[in-house]
Structures are given as structure tokens and as C-alpha cells.
Image (cartoon, rainbow, N blue to C red; front, side):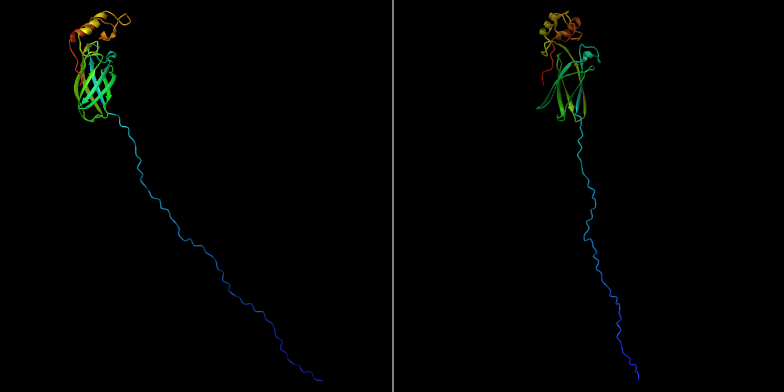
Length: 209
């Protein structure tokens, strides 16, 4: 027997690895509109209230029969009237200082030339003129105030003399003592008070404006 070799093809399975690219989608967030705030400087006006002092009228008088200024006996009550046309301002009783000065405000009074009138108890009224011109301080001299008007009538007469005569020689604290007849302010009614009245007897003060 003869053996014959026969070739037989045997299929061979070969594993082939094929690399396949893979696409990966990555989500990227992109901001759309971004709001940017730019500071703006704004000038703000704040009203400020400034207190302006009222205009002042500083007046000066000399009280007859009292010691020379300055002296506490020159501190006496006085009234003042200012008038210009239909405008009239009557001030209440104020008191002069030891040097005869007194001060009032003249706010709300328009500028112009005013008549003034002052009067103190036991004294005759005097008048004059002054000008308000818008100045912050206005000074006015009002001069000598004559005494002897004991009864306040603005006229020195026998009625005033009778009050002095009935109290003559008396001092404060004594019966019937009437301080109105004490023209010198020394709290006693004597020859000095009589002489002051005698010097101004029958004189009258200036009438109301």
C-alpha cells in the first residue's frame, strides 16, 4: 500500500482590532449678555439754613437829675414809637442800661425815614427822626430827657408840684411817701427834687406822632 499525502486547507480565524474614532460632544456654556453697571456721580444740592440776626436799633438817652453815666440810677424804663406814613411800631416798655442805652429790633420795617418818640415815667416825651437803611445795626442819639412829670400827664404843672409838696422831706418806708416825686432816684424827696421840677416847670413833652 502506498500512502499519498493530501494537503487540506484549514481556515484560520484571525481577530482584527479596528480602532474606530469616537466623537464626544462637550457642552460649553457661553454667557449671553453681561450687564455692566457704571457708577455715575450725581451732584445733590442740600439747602442750608443760615440764621441771620434781626436788624437792631441801638438808642441812647440821658436822664436828667440822675448821676452821670454809667450809673445804676440811669437804668430806667422807656417806651418807643416809630412811625413812617401809615406804618407805626409801638414797642413795649424796655429799660436803659447804666449808660443810657437801650436796644430794639427793627425787622419787617421797610427802609425809610421814621419819626421816633420816647418817654419815661416822670419824664417829658421827646421826638426826632432816624433813617432805616437796611444796616444790621443802627445807632441813634435821643438826647436829654427832662424830668418833673410826676403825674404822667406829659406836662409839668401845679398838679405835679402838689404831689411833691405833700411828700416833701419824706423817704422810702415813711407814710404817704410817693416815689413818683423822687426825681433823683435817691429814695428821698428833698430840695434837689424840688429844684429839678422848678427848672422844668410849665414845660410839656412832645405829643404822640
